[in-house]
Length: 141
Image: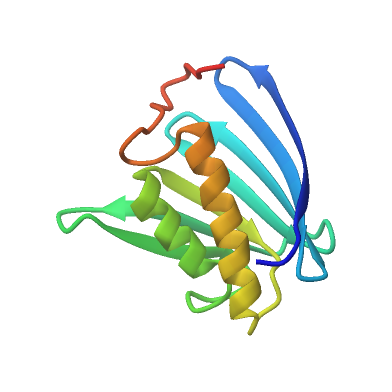
């Protein structure tokens, strides 16, 4: 992985909402991340070199096969950049995911990098199926 630098900032506005924002610079691009933990779901924004919203996806676990379903809410189709990230995040966290992503289409290396950085951050915050935080309105500090 190329050199990378980050600036982290976390703040909580409410007992039911946890906000985490950070930036990573790698491979000559700047990736911005915002994670908002809501009750039983996580909203995530990934920005690439700008603060545009990008495509918006919703993902949820589906039963009985424990798979994930993703739909496009704004722009893009199910095969667009971001839909795959949303699907894999649902499977990794077991939570509903709302993902806004403006990573350029046909940039699989950048998409993989952004997903890897995001998963590392989510794991450090405790959002994984194994050590999952229960988003019932109580967050560890």
